[in-house]
Length: 141
Image 1 (cartoon, rainbow, N blue to C red):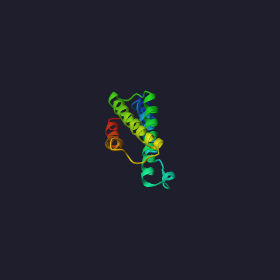
Image 2 (cartoon, one colour; image 1 turned 180 degrees about the vertical axis):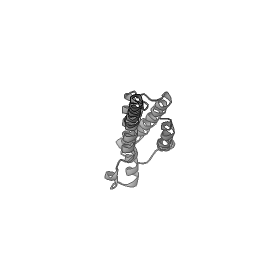
Image 3 (cartoon, rainbow, N blue to C red; image 1 turned 90 degrees about the horizontal axis):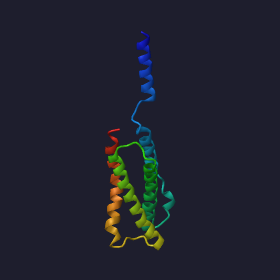
Image 4 (cartoon, rainbow, N blue to C red; image 1 turned 90 degrees about the vertical axis):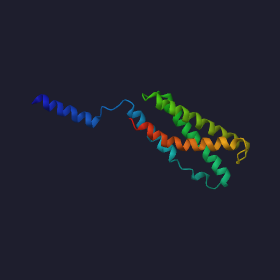
């Protein structure tokens, strides 16, 4: 009887406290921080002309996403190598789009050159799609 009661108590504690994957707290932190980056308010840019507002928003959002990804990867979380590889690729893309928009801002121009446009559009789209792909990567945890 005591053994059964102890088992029930241990099982109950495991259900409450959790005996989950060691990656879980890291992923929960990641998802929380990712949500904060995605939900960031850019209303301080509303008064700017459309082209400038778009460039500055891309710059700020890519910078925030890049910093979050770099920080997460720096902690070397106990997640799969597949997820780490995906996040490294995402970080590389956000760094590149950040650089493109920083250069434009530094030059005081808010329209892409013919050389920048295809790559910038590709990267901005990839950055948006990465969020949906992230959900697939998190499914196994």
